[in-house]
Image (cartoon, rainbow, N blue to C red; front, side, top):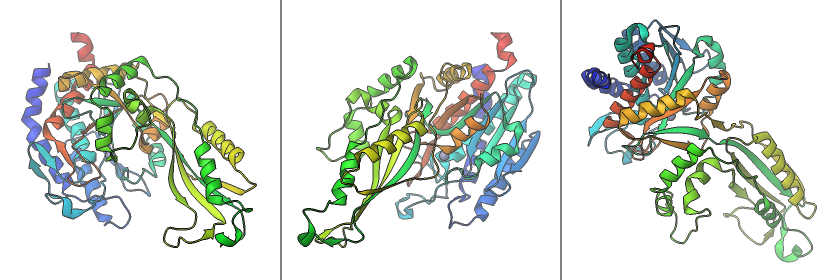
Length: 454
Ligand SMILES: [Zn+2]
């Protein structure tokens, strides 16, 4: 069967790359200040792709939003249905002078297609489309129903995703594949099993109505900057819950090729900067530990620094929470710690930013997760790794939440060279082909055809 699939795929692969190139040519940047007509143009292009390929249903979703495209290939109703997600909007090109070829003029160099949106996330549109078309052709009556959601504002945080998901009940499927992440490298596929949640706080302490001369007044009066530093240094997060065996095994495997040296290089750390966790725990720490980071601080200003006893000090703190921890509970604990630690009767205010992101994880013991691991193994010819992600992707949690009980598989076509969001973004064409092949194998694995022939 795999040979047959590969033959079909080889026959259409070049045309799929052409589709990707055409999509990349549209600068569909969803940020404010960029021409919104390109968003419309790209949404129309995606819409047309499904129409041309005779999908049973194709329509726009999102009344006030950048349009999303919903499409469906009806399939055997006795089989599990599959929802395929990707997004057509892209990041701005950033520093255009650093691009070796213009961001919106796709170019192939050394087996990689360069251009803004190649990896994030327009290649995923092609992966889903090609996989669905070949699966339909080969499986016929035994093809599962395949639905598409192609979003247009993921890069600006999917602000309307919850409303959008409510608009179309038919989006609910037996399983969803979100292809918007990264493989471990160009040869080893990966599936992301978790995202950390996030909540941010602003902390301000005040001592007096106005700043004073530090020479005249320091001594009896508390220094707010030291008071705030004391609070920040005292904050402690609870320990993250233990990891499942298969996830630990995967992290251990990856740790063999990702240690202090790699972290220092990737993070551009200075020579003597210490790493705060054991070498074997780096990935766990990045993906599965709770962390607290002071993202900005202010007491006076560097520009106007002088001999001043400041009257107020401010900091913004971002807290990352792994799956298995209750973000609201942690937030309350941290607020209490801040209050308890606040010294010298300083006037304290704590403001929680809106836009809390809950942590996310998918059940790795789920049958669809196992089927995907298997499909990736066959498609890439290499055992896939189970990775995590330290950041939050609002859309993933929103889709999981909107359709409770629908398992979500977070796959990707990116790799460490992809440089999504940066200059010279690219996708490996070899990986593109393997990603399509894997997705067809996944669809095949849930078809009744598969059940019969095995
Ligand atoms: Zn993306």
